[in-house]
Image (tube, rainbow, N blue to C red; front, side):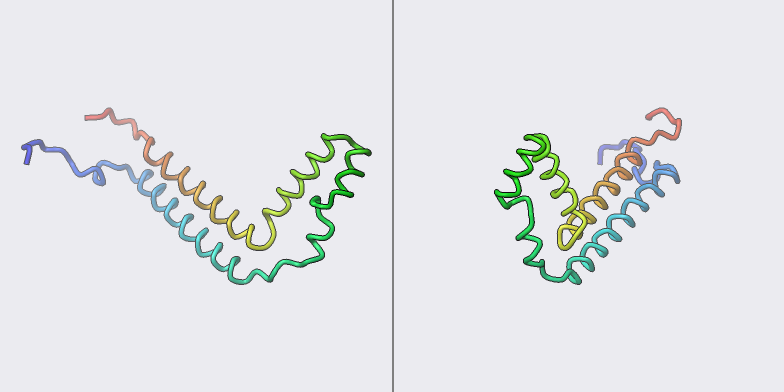
Length: 119
């Protein structure tokens, strides 16, 4: 009981800040639910995909002869990025992107100034 008359921080928030916090929470919950559904319904990985992947040293050697080290690196990057949108990796991608959008909403809402000077 310090005797100060500070207001509750939730009361000082503008309606726009409250909407951003609510939107961030809704996005986060929806992303987690979607990620759980994707993870639960993903079929097991196909063994043929592993056979014809960049992990095959013969493929990497041929690609390096044709296009050099840059072609090998670009093919590895493309395969990694393409892998984010399939199977269980898609569930993790959806969860991380949802968390990032929610954090962006919370960050903008926290630093949103309604034009009032701090008291």
